[in-house]
Amino acid sequence: MASLQGYVDHRVLLILQDGRAIVGVMAGFDQKSNVVLSDSKERVYSMDEGVEEIPLGLYLVKGDQIVLIGELDDAVDQSVDLSTVRAEPLPPIRY
Amino acid sequence: MLPLSLLNAAQNKPMLVELKNGETFNGHLINCDNFMNITLREVYQTSAEGDRFWKLKECYIRGSTIKYLRVPDTLLDAVKEEQNRAREAGRSARGAHVSGAGARGRGMPTRGGRGMVRGAPARGGRGRGRGA
Picture (cartoon, chains in turn yellow, orange):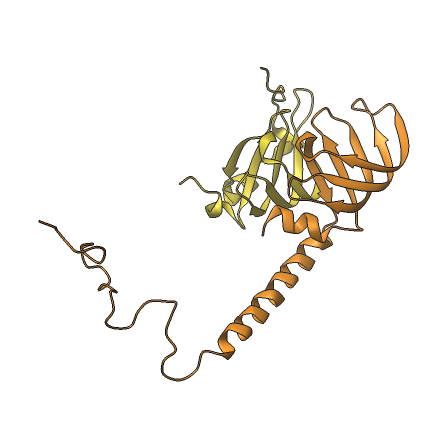
């Protein structure tokens, strides 16, 4: 069975259907992949300036909005200077 | 920790709810259910573009329309503590009547019965074996 249990208490990246990228510590999840993220921040990508991190705090994201959950390698993530990163923001999902 | 236990613990607390259409609702949680249907009081509704606002005394939001909820940071510790307390209470209640010999039941059988040696190949244990 696929499970999110291995991600609990780890720093993860969440991509939502509206194209948002949120990083946070996975505090919990349930059968429907609803996810609790603590200490979460949204990463806003743009081509004109570096990545902006917006603090969001404690978040409960509904499973049906989630496109992807990935574990973050803390060491690698912290070695990246986000202010130097330029990238197109992800577009929202299209049907 | 289950998302729904966090939500239940958020009753009477302020929260921000964003719907799939981008509208947001700021208010205090009155009640919620397992579908994540919620009722809020003293609500500030904001349009998806963020240019229009409404004040609502109370509103009901169907769980399936929600994208995410933002709740106070302090709730996480509150819920974790509550769970620890519940676990401790459960343990001492269960442990109370398990005493002396004859305390059998759950758990790995120590000896005898139909329990199998750990790591042994899985055979038998059920039914009457190979059959004719």
